[in-house]
Length: 124
Image 1 (cartoon, rainbow, N blue to C red):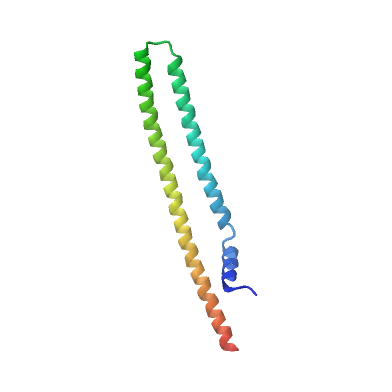
Image 2: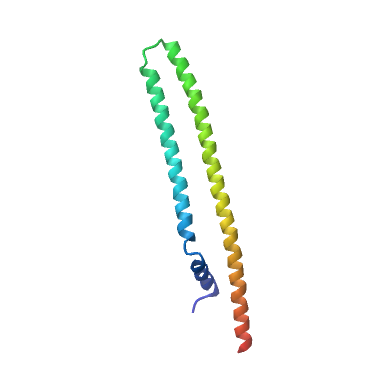
């Protein structure tokens, strides 16, 4: 015999079969986006540093260029991280909304199941 809790889970899965796959897919997209951003930034930084270091210029000029590039990369990284943070925040909000929706559905399912059980009990 299944418990009402087991019935509720089965009912939710029947009503929302793609829920778990959607959340898994969303998490993978967020993780892959982060890897792409970090890889891109690492490549840009490495290329900029190598380009400056291999350029035949005086040390003071080279140090100035390195400093400027460092600031540019820092600003770019800050901007990219803010964008990534905003994307994560949006994903969290979407997950919160979905969890609230699921909680409401679960509550309705529990209430319906309780009413059905009560009705069956009164018939006996």
